[in-house]
Amino acid sequence: MRRARRSAHAERAITSAVRGLCTFVACALIGALASAAAALRIYADSEAVRLSPDSRGFLLTLERLGILSAVQREIVIDRLLALDAEELDAEQLKWVVLMVLSSQPGQETAFAQLEDLSAAIRPRLAH
Image 1 (cartoon, rainbow, N blue to C red):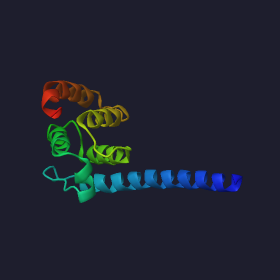
Image 2 (image 1 turned 180 degrees about the vertical axis):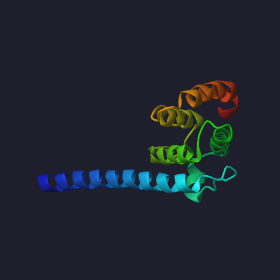
Image 3 (image 1 turned 90 degrees about the horizontal axis):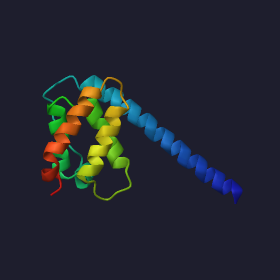
Image 4 (image 1 turned 30 degrees about the vertical axis):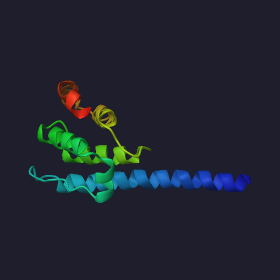
């Protein structure tokens, strides 16, 4: 029984590490491809089901305003989809964006812009 528990724990740890590595590799590839300022993100069906049109629009707005880069947007989407929630709401999106921005050096201005923007549009995202 102990061996089975250790095996299950090891399997979860390996799965988590592989996901992290995949995220890192994906972000590196995205960074290499994200040089086109006019690029448009096409969401997979599985992403579109969990991210509302308002959430996707908010991400697009953040990117167009220069608050998020394309790479940061992909990190945000990855972290949102990793949450254990059927439907992701605007508050969860805001917190994940804040966490991504705060985890990266030199993003203080973007962080402040997001705070101002989210305060200004909070009533619209609540619906």
